[in-house]
Image (tube, rainbow, N blue to C red):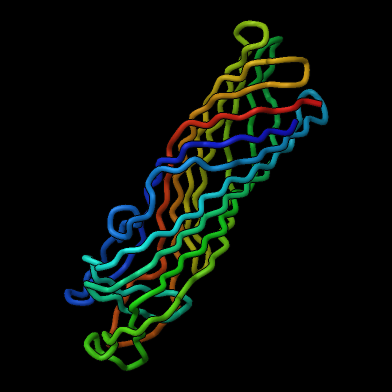
Length: 262
């Protein structure tokens, strides 16, 4: 089966940063503080292969790319990107990019079946490809600097690209309540803590699939996705204590797709 479609994403994205004046950590909101679009219609692609009545493999991909600009920043912050501390002052002109691609691959086993229903267990991996970038009036903090010394801002571009593979385990089910109409759902979760990375994810989807012809189907669904990715920084500066690169992302919204069954 091959499925293509789109989803209307209502996103919430935050990142741990540090207040340069008070020194305390707080969550910088990409939508409220940096003007990234909260709602977007975005593409996704999915394939599945059933190699007998009980076994399946699957893969899918979603994309969320956003950028925005603020002319006068109202929330000053310090951030760690690529093992370097940067300082962004209030009043700065700042352009922000947050690109997230989500790839999912896995295996499913139908452990309970009937004439019109299936219940299964899935094992797989979600991999997130994350790019965070800032372009504008940004100061760089060198080793030994104080907060005041690293506050001078110059036009510069800084970014961090992270690949975060998160294994998952989940359940799925489908139920054909009348011929040609099927309810389906999956729920997946995992948490990992290894070396300098911690992460967790929740992926839940439920929908209704309608058979248009022998090969073509249409699906309307609702998806909730949440992931936390925390990376310990290798920055060692005694005078400046800045939050690690910790990103929190979630979206919720409807999905519409068409699929072709071979």
